[in-house]
Image (cartoon, rainbow, N blue to C red; front, side):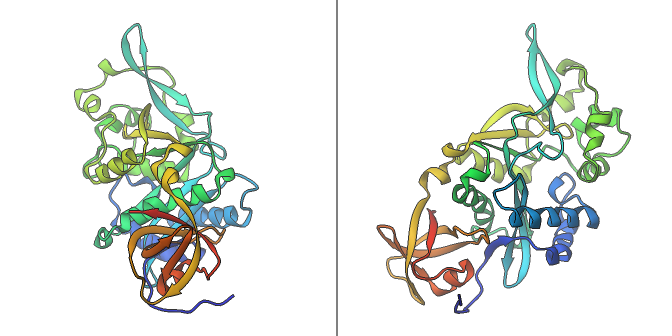
Length: 329
C-alpha cells in the first residue's frame, strides 16, 4: 500500500523507542508534579518498551499505550492510556470517607482496574490551534476503535496544587514518612512505585488533623491543569471520592459509553481524497488500525462517505475505501 506524500500536518501516532531524546527534551520543560514526565532516561525508556509491547500484543493482555504528537517530524507532545490500571503495579489512592460524620482519608487500593487516560503534555509553544484537543481526544478515539481492549470504567488523575515544587498536601502527610521534597518524591514514585505501599501510613487520616493549607488544596487542581479539568467535565467525567496520595489532586471517572466523544463519534468511509475539500467541516479524525493515527482536519461528509484533504489522508495512512472515525468540533 502506498500513500501520496504532501505537507506534514500535526499527527498523533504510537510512540517509538527512537522518540526517547525528544521526550526527554519535553521533560526539561515540564513543571514539578507532571508525573508522566518525571522520569529518568531509563524509566522513560522502559515505558516506551512497554508501549511497543502493548501494540505488538494488541488485545491479548493489559498494556500501557503511549502516543506522540508530531509536528513537521518534531515530537512536541505526548499522551497515554493504561488499559487496566493496577494490573501491573498496585494502584493506591486516598478515599474521602466519614466516620460518625467526621471526614477522613482512607488509604485505599483500587481493585476495579479502570482504564486510565493520562500522560498528557504539550510543549508550551504549541498550546494553540486545538492541538491540546487533538492530544486529548485522540485517546478517546482509540478507546472507541478498540473497546474490547479497555475497561468500561475510565478515569483520569489530575495534577494537584503545588508551587515551585512544593505541595502543602505532600508536606502534611507524605513527607512525614518519606523524607523527600515533593519534586523528589514525585519522580521517585515513577521509578519505584512499590515505595507507596511500603512507606505510606495505612491508618485513617482525619482532615481536621491536617494543616489548613493541606485541607484547602485537597481536590483542587494546579492552574495549568484547569483546561484539562474543564475538558474532561465537558466530556462527561465526574469527580470521585478518590484523591492522589502525593498532591491531593482529584480523580475523575466516567463510564466509557458516556464519554461525549464516544457517544458522538461517527463511523465513516473515505470516499475521496483531494487537495481541496468543499463544504468543509472541522473535526478530529482517526483511522481504525492498530498502527493508530489521528489528525485535526477539515473534511466533507455525505452520509458515511467522507472527503479528506490529501495531507490528512497521508498522515492517517488511509486510502479510498478505508474506514475512519469522525468527531466534529
